[in-house]
Image 1 (tube, rainbow, N blue to C red):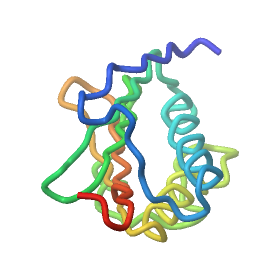
Image 2: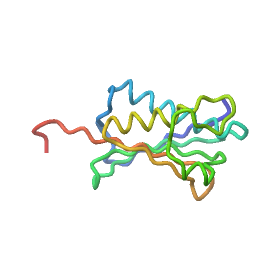
Image 3: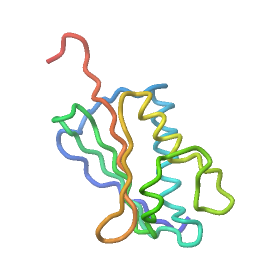
Image 4: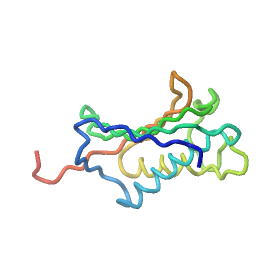
Amino acid sequence: PRTRLVVREPDPDARGLRVSVCCGGEGFARALDALLENACQGNGVRPSGQVELRVSVRHEVGAAALEVADDGPGFTAAELELPIEAFRTARAGALGLGLYTAERIARASGGALRRDNRESGGAIVRLFLPLFVRPGAP
């Protein structure tokens, strides 16, 4: 409840954007919920004070990027080296399913999930989802 959520203005190409997500809106909502919850909670000892959400289009790879960035403690170097797996967490009392769920939904949708630390401190997770193109559309 003390975390400030900032939704950044999407890049102009992202307006009216449609992405292809396994399980449709429900899958997208689950992935976004997991990423936002993780960002807000930090490492369980130090929560984030602010979480930023931004949507952009990566035409070069035919994907939309949903970025969730926070000012919490970020990922440890060891965490970044390990693959994302179910039930792996550094947060006491957590199940370790948040990043795993988001990553599996992205993969099942033909996308990907990337995590890193921000130069200014905190974590950034990018969820890449394929752009939805209607048959016969340019």
